[in-house]
Image 1 (cartoon, rainbow, N blue to C red):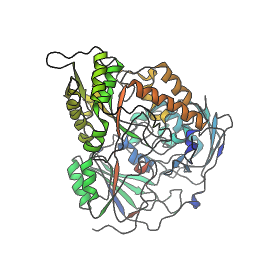
Image 2 (image 1 turned 45 degrees about the vertical axis):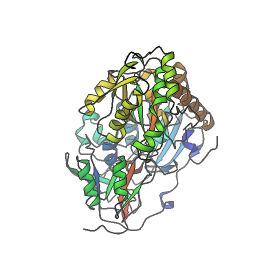
Image 3 (image 1 turned 120 degrees about the vertical axis):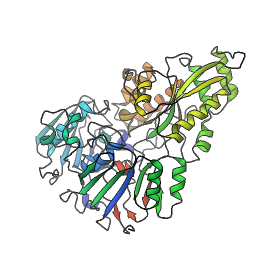
Image 4 (image 1 turned 135 degrees about the vertical axis):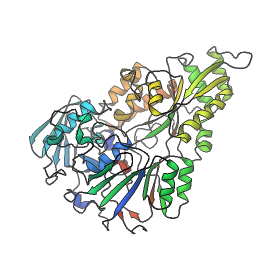
Length: 533
């Protein structure tokens, strides 16, 4: 394995001391002031990313709350609330030294007590249960030192300290005994990030105002961010083309990307999504006949024609995905079975599985569901699958869901045959990949768990070992073996990486191109050329 400067992430708790660079060494962009208008269709339930995953909450939460670390575009950790960090030689603790002058929006200082409270709150309440499972406790020997104690080495911990995953909450606000998941402060948050919540008109807009006492000198550059919530995607596109919206993140529709790439006052970039690792795939209910037979699942994979989907249906905008770990990840394994389009091989496998065609040429009738709300990545591919599988005698009925809760209830309760889905890696397999394949995570009623009901003791063992392995090379090898097994057993047919793009007004500088993009602090973005009014 060729180790790069990203390799610290793979073996982050390998016993080396990792010290942060001072803020003054980072490039400072010229220009300040003004308002940035961001457009989104996603309405946040609230603003507290400590107890809620997803983009809708992460975008505002990462502006309002600071986290111990942040990351650059090369997966390297950067200081944030923690000015330095040191890993114990045995990998069983990590010591954070906090900056001296960070305060919450109400003027109270940020202390190690807040860090300890936040970490344990996230561990108890965040939906990503494996993310902080190794944390036993957090000691606070002084107000600016937090020592995280671990039950075993946890190489994903540094990435788990990212803004979208570990917002530091004020203990004096949230530690009042109320349920943090329903705490009234979730809608009126007090953080220590570059912006504080201004006005919130539910379902319409919210504003983020510059925090004048933010602890990084000269930041944020902007005076204000307005996030307009526009439910009609076409209206949102028109507003962006007209310059009424200055930033439109998380574009994934091929036609929308093409459309905005042609707009003369916009720049469309494909950076800022590596940490998310969003994959589009076809999942199988491995406990339902005939899909409990791996030969049937392989036949479907050979007939699906990934190359056609990516080149034609996705217009060449998406990268193919071939394994559980997203392309571009330090753990991506390219040497797996690709299931190149082969109708003859698919038919042979179905014959071997005993699925003989009837007088009409039909071997079996199955249902395919899809995640509502993204036609190009979901519904269109489901419709294509119907025609693709007809070639091998499988009659596929497309079942639409009127809304996300309906789809989620069906899939999480195992009431499906096949379903399209979109799932995020969240930077490290421990955080976002393991949940899909661990036998212990087959949890009825919980969406984005192991809803395929896939179970392989060898896979469980590999993931358990990789979760605590501190050697970058050994960890990479464990995940490589894991990927080869999963691809061979096909609980999921991997199709493509979601072709996310961000569109920005051309007058903007300091664009967010780190691995977390717009779900990290937007304190460096500025107006190089003021927008036309």
